[in-house]
Image (cartoon, rainbow over all chains, first blue to last red):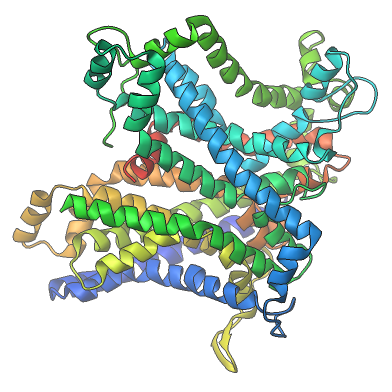
Amino acid sequence: MNVSQLTDRFGLLAVGLIAFVVVMLALYGLAELASRRNRSRLVASVFLFPAVLFLLLGLVYPAVRTIVMSFYSSDGSRFVWLDNYGWALSDPDAVQTLINTALWIIIVPALSTALGLVYAVLIDGRRGERTYKALVFLPMGISFVGASIIWKFIYQYKATGNQIGLMNQVVVWFGASPINWLNTFPMNNLLLMVVLIWIEVGFATVVLSAALKGVPLEIIEAARIDGASPAQIFWRVTVPSIRSAIVVVAVTVFIATLKLFDIVRAMTGGHHGTDVLAHNMWDQAFRLGNDGRGATMAVLLFLLVVPVVIYQVRNMRRQELEAR
Amino acid sequence: MSVKTEPEAVSTIGESRGERIRRLLSSRLASAFAVGIALIWTIPTAGLFISSLRPEDDIRATGWWTFFGDPSFTLETYNYVLYSTSQGGGLIRNLINTVVITIPGVIIPVTFAALAAYALSWIQFKGRNLLYIGIFTLQVVPLQMALIPLLSFFSKGLAIGPLTLMPAWQLTGVQTIVQVWIAHSIFGLPLAIYLLHNFMRELPTDVMEAARIDGASHSQIFRKVVLPLVTPALASIGIFQFLWVWNDFLVGRTFGGGEATRPLTAVLGDMAGTWGFGWTRLPAAAFVAIIVPLLVFLLLQRYFVRGLLAGSVKG
């Protein structure tokens, strides 16, 4: 690290921040002028301009462009109709990628939400509840890459001699021979999912635990007086009362799972039958240089979130009606 | 936040909900389960931390749990990964990249989002609802949809047929970091706008109307009334975006140019992926990247949780 590398980077930072402040001051002046004349349409445009510009140029236009690109050849020069989609649905590796993605988006949200709920219920009102929660919540602050490294050491394999990975050490302690976890299909897929579940359970716990505190105790008391067993109370009172929180957690984890790139990249690179859509998309476009196929994978990814989009918008509409 | 978060919610009549369900599973089994989960969630990180302090030969030879029988530790690996000029060292450069990327990567989107959220919640104009629904929807659009065109937008410019709307940016060396700023700002906007809109809409109407009657303009209300009131929300969203940018691999790897200008997490992700001969230095390198967000997370957890609940429980 020499001095010029430092001045380069912090110089850039200073220039960037100054430029940003200047632009914001100019915008603010404009808003002030428009406000004084009481032209609310103009004021709104000034306030919305930077965000809308960024979203149009950086998200909406590129998304449309990606859809178009998915009908073109690898370098975008030739229109190939649905060839890329045909490849995605017939090539054995691509099909494996789709199967894996399907497994991920079912297993990870289900297990994360279930574990988070059970844990939240078990620690509710227990002494040291905060500490229990904090311990499980901690991985939320660790990057997916960091978590992947942590777990890669857990799964580490040596054919002979002392084991370095904790899992294989446990296997050896039980008298079995060590297993090359990450190279063994299809188990390796589950082991990668464990890493994401490890991260997401904390999120589920915190949100569901807060929701649990909102369940009115009178209802539970009433159910108890009516002779309901604890299991009945859990399934018929607690779970329905926090249903909306459970749905929100599952949907949030679902979206995070769908977009997951880092864990696969850092742990297996998508080899040994562990590829998923979001990673394969990147691999096709930026490592193998096939923009058409990369774009196709991105579009398939998008198609999977469309139901969530519809659900969310309908939900919001309903809430707005209720608020009126 | 509409949900109470008292740590010890105990029924006035008898036991708490948790206690009742615990009784079903028998208290001991429940305890064992809770403790087991807490352990599984802690041991892996602790193991990596211990490994990062062990001499490299030890890491290669035995597992971190043998450390307790035969403790020997060194800071040499940290020294190497941060400052060495040899292969796999000198990560201080990438750590600085991360800092340089993160500061504008948080400030720009949060500022833009605050402005937009104000307009969407307190200025009347035609098409406001439609615009809000549009932005709300963008939240779930995977950023993978934007990667290829956005990168070509920076490297080749924007043209419709022969008509050039925007020339190529031709950024080189450290300048490529500008691309990362912009990419992070774009991808962070929808969630930030959504959360801030949630907070701003809840501001009391009488306060806003009183300010209007006193003759304050929209820009004055925004600066003098709204901003001070939503400071806690800005903090929550700032922490979200900070963690996201600092911990990001995909955006930094795609837009960050060569290895010298990439953020730390991106370099680390590649190192972990190849698992080359320097793998014994990975624990130390990983901890350099993990420690800052972890501290921020621990110290400011209250704000983080508040943002999380505002964004999810209401939805």
